[in-house]
Image (cartoon, rainbow, N blue to C red; front, side, top):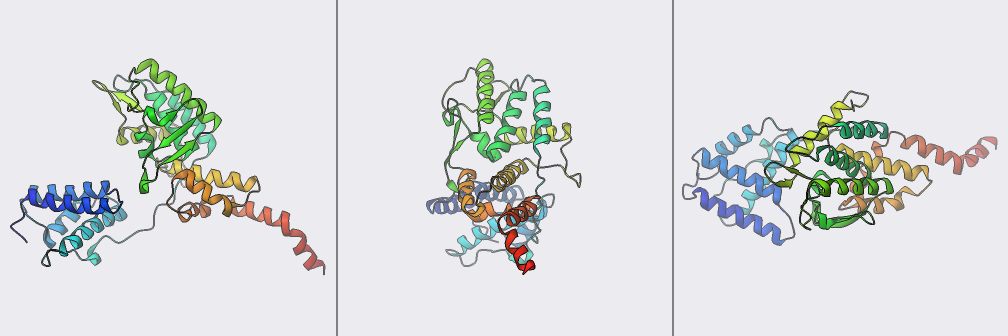
Length: 326
């Protein structure tokens, strides 16, 4: 262990590392949070630097998290230590063989339109609270944006009034995941939901500054909804509307985005469109870094095999029949 690195100096190493990565075009917000959490742990344990025992102790604190989340955080620390090793050959670098073993990712719970209808009804019936007078309207709009526009939770939370064109129904999603900004046109029904929300919001919250959050609540003053607050609200609606799959699994908030992608693919198939040529359009709409990310959803479509078989039978069935007849 290096005893010449007090917490402030270790913080400087983290700051230099994060700045280096950002110069390469990476955001590294999550990585910065993980590394600062590690620094705080070392300071709390009165350790000046990281060694194997300290790393193992820190990893033990991650036990309540999923194996994949633990492994991701351990890999963040591993890359940081490798960066330090370039200028300090004696710097500790954890052994990747000791990291949490990767597990198959959880298959999304696909939410059906009738389940969304029940959630919207439950959201409308929710009572406002002193800290969240817009609670019913906020949760209703969030569900609509997740399910009909495929937005990520962070994207919805970061929307400001400057990002909203309520007249034509277009959202500007600024520098989201992979540093990609994009414009998201809404469906007519989602556009109408947005207009209704804005009317209610402006009637209750007078903050119309361009930088004001779209989704807001109030304790002493108006402020943006937090990720935890929005998640808890959506999970409550999953329970209240009894949204479960055949295995009685409750969805996660992100599963609404998965459901949007699957519904979009099903609609493309039913309209007889070429899926492969349309995947880049869906990838652009969802803000994916590549078409491969969008193609991930293809095996998740329960009706896709049947739809593909129907299309094949319609277009090529006569050829098969001619082969048998011959």
